[in-house]
Amino acid sequence: MDMSVFDDNYQNDQTGRSAYNPKVLLKVVLLAYSRGLISSRQIERAFNENVTFIAMSCNQRPDHSTIAAFVSSMKDQIKPLFRDILLVCEQENLLGGTFFAVDGCKLSSNASKEWSGKIEDFKKKKEKIEHTSKSFVENHLEKDKAEKTVKGQKSTGRDKQIKKLQQQADKIEQWLAGHDKKIGSQGKELQSNLTDNDSAKMHTSHGTVQGYNSRAIVDSKHQIIVHGEAIGKGPDNDNLPPVINGAKENLQSIGKAEEYFENKILAADSSYHSITNLNKCTEEKLDAYIPDNKLRNRDERFAGRVGYRPQSKKFTFADFQYDYDKDKYICPNGKRLKRFAKPGPHRGKLLRRSVSKETDFRACHLRAKCLSSKDAKRRHFTYYADVSGNNISHAMVKSDRKKAGKYIQSE
Image 1 (spheres, rainbow, N blue to C red):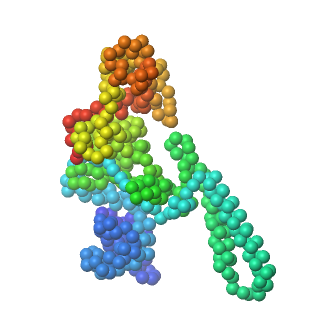
Image 2 (image 1 turned 90 degrees about the vertical axis):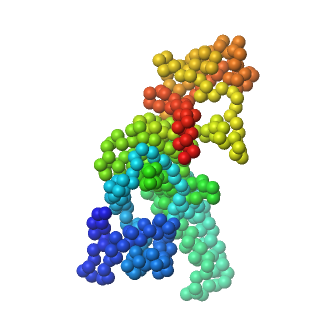
Image 3 (image 1 turned 90 degrees about the horizontal axis):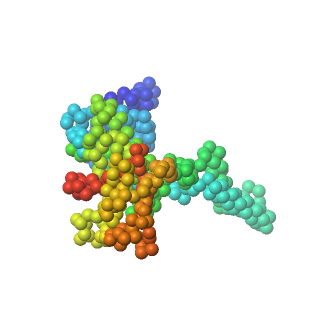
């Protein structure tokens, strides 16, 4: 591994104490992460108590501030080092290159969710703090007059409260001066955070945290991570493209072709089932298996599990055949649905609509299994399509039903 990337920060032989060797710091930090130690103070304690850490560090014992400074300064060095590791994995034949999986977890950041909100929320909070501070000052002056406070007397706890409130108001004012609204993919304003504006509120099984959605794409042969990143966005509906692009860059840097992912298998859970992610898989020609939220209701293997709800006996989108030549759907009774002349854009995506003829359902013997209610007169389909107009979500449902798809999802 090329450690020269640390030379600028760890060459101080002229004056003061010599810097710790970055090789020692790096290998001990990686060892700590593999053991679940992500706190600088926990790593410092391991230097003094754990014989493995003592041996790896050659009995050197940097304190937590040295470890924290080393980790925080690695921003520009992470990618080159990570790619060096991938190159070693490739030379040792640890990469299979045929089956990849994507998953992630929510990680807390060093920021308080209490300091999250929209721009207007911050402005109101600043006004409220200033109003409270002003009230404290007025009450303090009145109390001083009543008690005839002697000059030079120690300040009370109320003085500290006023100072703290003023600092909070100044903090909000400075932040507002340097930041604009955070706009999401749908054009709506998202919540910002005064402490760490790149982070966001994340809903987890343990409650809501202020942090990041970390994701990794893994080569299945030996569970080698080929790319990982963290982003301040909870939902995964458009998180697959940056993961795949990052993995492509890393693999190309070790000599892989640009078309490396073509015809390779990619598996992900239902949180990644979206038109954006499926379009990316189609663009990269990936054999992707990303189930939708109704997979378990279609799959009889889940029938014995708690909460299983069998799929309705009514016809679903998967029961309709698609005529590619005429670009129309055909119902189970052989009737063609009318397609709207032009697909309309909706939230930046291509929205397709198909509707049946009213006359086709008047005497249809499958009417009860097709229409949602007795009063309905037509069957409507609305779905998101890829750039060519195809319903790739429908295609994914069909791949889930195949034997290979069921095996991959069970793995």
